[in-house]
Length: 484
Image (cartoon, rainbow, N blue to C red; front, side, top):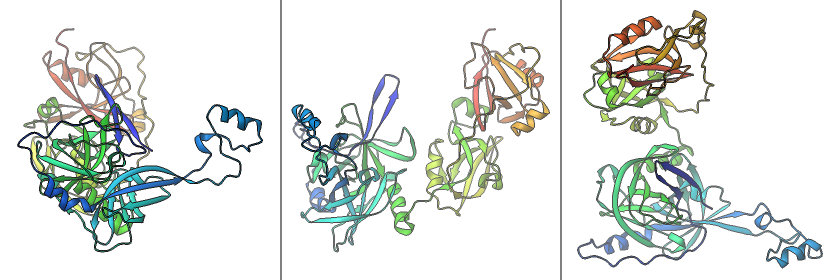
C-alpha cells in the first residue's frame, strides 16, 4: 500500500512517495565510512528502544486480485489454474491481508506513539512491535491527513520515550539521524545532513518540511528524525523518487507541527485550525516597489472575506502582512502555517504595511472551514464597438451599473481583450479595480481614467494592477511595452 503524487518543474520530473513498505527489496552497498565523521553509537543506544515498528492489516473485501470466486468443478477454474492464476474457492474463508509496514516512536511512557497518518489509513488492525520484541495491538486515537500525523495508544507502562527537540534551531548542513524499519528491517539507523528548511511541496502548504539527504526508504514512514543531541526534530514522511527508493531527497514533518496536532488529538480527538479570512499572494520585487516596501517580503492581501475576522478588525485589500505576534512573515507561504497553528478564539496582533506606513491590527482568529469554490463570473458590459488597445495593450470598457451590482464592486473597468505582446497575469473578463504606484493605490472608475493614468507613464515602466477574477481578487504587475 503506497500513496504517491507527482511533481514536475521544468525538466525535473519524479515522484514524491510516502515511505511505506509492502515488501522487501535488496539494498545497495554504501561507501565506507570516511575519517572524521561523527560517532552515532551513543545516540543509537540511547534512543533505539523508543522507536517502534508498525504492522498494518486490512481485511480483504474481495477475492484475490479481483478474480471471481469459483468452485473446483467449474470449467473456468481449470482454465485459470493452467495459466498460473488460482481463483479463490467459493465459500472459502477470507483471511486478513497484510498491507503495510511503517515506523513510529514513543512519546509517552504510558503507551502514546506517533506515526504518519498514511501508515494507518484504512487499517483494520494495527500491531506495534517494540525494540524488546514485545507486540501490542494499538488503538488509533486520531489521525490528521493535512499534517499526516496519527496518534496511537498501546496498553503498556514504563516504556522508553524520546525527547522532543526544537526544529527552529536546526541549521542547514547540520547532521541528523533517522531510525526506522526500511524494507521491514527493524531498528535501522541512517544518517545525513539537513539539506533545506521550510520546503513547500505540492498539494500541501501547512507543513514547512525539513529536507534531508538521510537515506529514507519504504518502511521509514512515521519514524523519528534526531538531531545530534538525540532530540526528535522531525518525522520522516516523504521521499522524492523516480524508482520508489532513496534518491537523496527526503522530507520530514517538523516535530512542533506534529506535536500541535498530537496535543489536539489527545484533547478532543480532532484538529481545529485558525483562519482570519484573507486571500493572499506573494510579494514580488515589482510589488514591493509599487507599495513602497523596502524589499519583497510578507503576504500581500488581495481579498478580504466579507464579515470575516480580518474585515471586522480593519484589514484591507492592499495591506501587506509582515508579522504575526512579532514573528516575521518572510513569505506568503508562512502566513497560513502560522495562523492555522493558532487556536480559534485567540487574538493575534498583525503588523501590516499600508500606504507606506506600518500599522498594528488585532484580529480574533476563527476556525477554518472548507469554502466551496464559486464559479467564475466573467461578465461585464458589452461595448458596441471593440475598444482600441491602450498603452499597455489592454482593450477596456466601462461597467454598467447593473454589472457593478452583480459583481459587488463600486467601480472598475472590464478587460475585453489583450494584445499579443502583453506579459502578465491578466486575461479577458478580468475587472481592474485599482492601479498602485509608489505605495499609493488609485481606484479605477472608468476606462478613460485608467488609460489617461497609463498614458502619463514612460514606456517600459512597471504597473501594478488590482484585479477581480470571478470571486478572487489579486495584484499583478505588468510592464508597459517599450514599443508600440
